[in-house]
Length: 269
Image 1 (cartoon, rainbow, N blue to C red):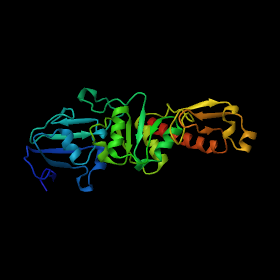
Image 2: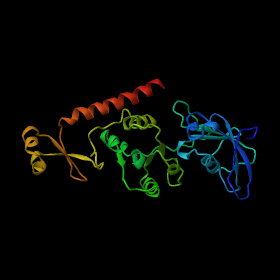
Image 3: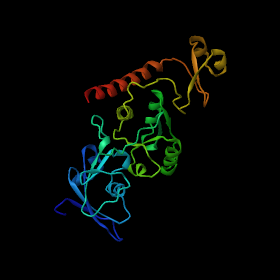
């Protein structure tokens, strides 16, 4: 161990020197336990940028809002000098750091997501509260990154390596394990508690739900549904039909719980 911290190497190849990296707040979650809340000394090669150096120790660029090199804000493309001190900060919510060189780009507008398989159950919950959340069970990392880049979507994943891909401009490393907690985490991250539009998207495919007359969907209804319900909506993409059945109250409780949890965290900050 170096007197300045833990020494991280890059294997073979010509080296330009070393930098000292200090991660702050929740960015320490991406580091091994022995490197958290400590300065990490990292070797680097001449062509490598601060983005390369920071991602080499395990921190995805999508989680970074500010990088200071010897006290000065820099961009991801900055190439450090040997002996430089890098201070790396996560997304700021209550402090304006624009003047220092904020790195987190504004989220896409409208806000759209692409969901990785390792947080698959998050996709229908996002659709339930009204967000465009694309999910394909068999999609590989390169497929997700391509969709994120071409459609300007936010990647939601448990895979930090996916977030280091160049095509991924917007992404969230989802920390929560339970689907409802994951939903709350995303709502908090983008301050969405007041922007929910429940029951406007199809849960299986994410298509937009449109009003439909009973006659329009009569051939798709079971006898008891025909008898007891008169108001329907239908997915414009896959044709799935919905009505306010016995499941509606349970779904409403999920929506209200998520909105309340997301709002309470915002009010505390």
